Length: 120
Picture 1 (cartoon, rainbow, N blue to C red):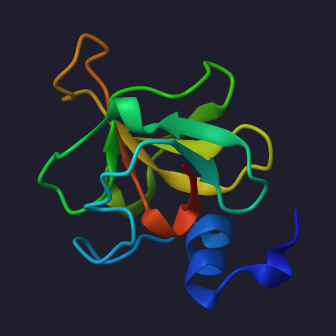
Picture 2 (picture 1 turned 45 degrees about the vertical axis):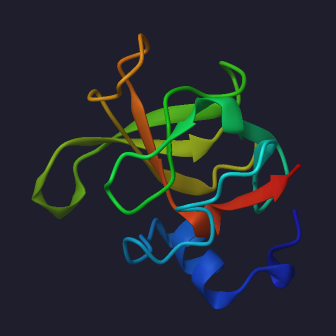
């Protein structure tokens, strides 16, 4: 993992559990077919096959690429209880998971574009 290659925004989000401004991320409206990787360690996290438009302002996925690629952690910060998604390989903050997804998984992985890289 080479954090020196990350932008200040990518560092803030992945290493300090930040959040990007909605509707501004590189992958928010991205439609290309392929895999979304952790920007820090390049582990495959999500497939474009599970990406959907949630209208929330962040890339949303209904499921992870592999069950062990993302770890979920209780996040009680900012006066609310949420489920944080982190890269299982390098512990980078990715975003949060909500139980309101449109598919049979019932999940909406709400992920910061700055936490992701893409490989067609």
